[in-house]
Length: 472
Image (cartoon, rainbow, N blue to C red; front, side, top):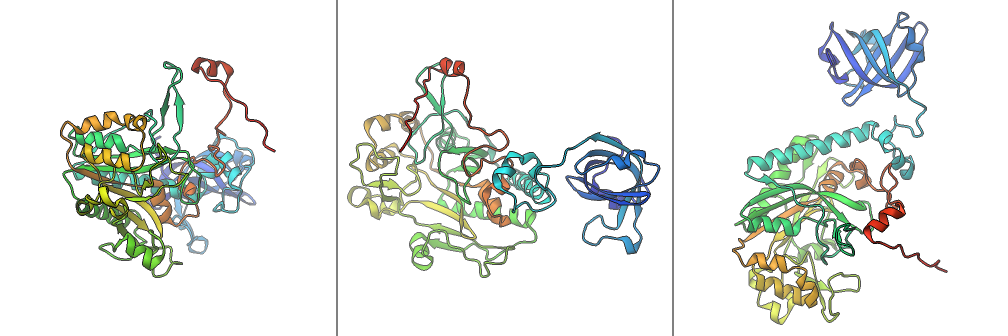
C-alpha cells in the first residue's frame, strides 16, 4: 500500500505524511482529542485524532484501522521513554475503520501466563497478538532463516522427505493414517526422517538438511509438545563424529550471536563430558552448567558423549520381538557402535559405547545425533540384540537392501527446533514457542482436534469403531 509505514519506522519519517495499518491497542479520551496506540507486528505508534476525525469516538480496542497523517515529534514533556517510538506520534488526517471487534475473551495486553492455557489454545489467534508471542514468532522465523543461510553456504541441500510413511518399531508410538486404496493397511506419520536421510546419503546427496515436522504419540511435558514438533535434521557423508560436533557448535554459536545478542554463551569451545562423567558429577546426562541459574541471559551449551549403545530393555520398550532380548537402544537402533567396542557385541553388549552425541543447553537436551551404521551385517546384529522377530526385521528389508549398493560412512544430528528456542528464551513451556500447539490434553489449538468423523468416511476406509466398555 502506498505510503504504508510500520509503527517502528515512524522515528525515521518526521514531517512526512504516512499511512499506518493495524489494531487499536489502547485508547485515551482527552476532551476534543482522542489518543490511540496503534499496534502492528513491529510495535506501537501513538496516533492523535483531532475533532476533525468524526469517527474517532467509534473506536474500540482491537478494531482494525487505517490511519493517514503526519509524523510529528512529541514535546519533550510528553515523550515516552519506555517505547522505541515514544518521541514521535502521528497526527491523523483520515481514519478508516476496516473491521470492528467484539470485546476479546482473553486479555492480550499482558504476558498471558496467568490465563488458563486451554482458553489460550481455544483463542490462539488472539493469544498470538500479545507482544511476547509476537516476539516468539519473530525469533522462530529468524532462527530458521539463519540456519538455512548458514547450511546452504556450507554446501548443504534442503531436501523434503515424505510425511506419509511406513510404521516401524522405532521407540515411540506412531500416528497411523488409514489407506483408502488398500483397506486394512496404514501409513504412519514420521517420528523423524531417520531412514530417509540415511537413504539420501546412499543416494549421494552427501550434505542434507531439513526443518522437519515429526510426529510421536507420547505424553507431553514442559520441554516436549504432544503429537508434533519440529527439528533441524542434518546428515553428512564421509564424516567422523568430530566433524559433526564442530559444524553444529559453529552453527549454534553464530546463531546465538545473531539472533540473541543480549545472551552470552558461558564457554566456547563447548565443554565435552562423557556420559559416565555427567552421571557421576551431576547425576544426569543433561547437566545445567550455568554459573548463575537465575540469569536468563546465560547460555551454557555442552556435549555429552560416549553413551552406552544399549540400556536394559523394559516392558515399555517397543523393540521387543520374541521377548527374549535384554537390550534396548540407548539412542536409536541405527547408531554405530564405537569401533573399539565392536567385539563386545558378541560377548558383552552392555559394554559397547555408541557414537552418539547429545547437545545440551541449560539443562535441556536440545539435540541428539550419532554416526550411523552403514554395514548391513552390523545393523542386522543390532536388530538381533534388541530382540527383533523375523517379521520385524522384514519391515526394514528395503533399508538393509540399500546397504548392499555402496553405503558411505555417514552421520548427523537433529537439534530440536522448538526445544532450542524454548530453552534459549527461557520460556515456561515449549508450547509458548509453537504457533499452534496441542494442549497438554492433546487437543489442537483452535480446531479442537481430534474429533469424530462421518460414518461415510469410515465406511470408505473400511474402519469399524470398537466402543470401549465403561471402566469401573
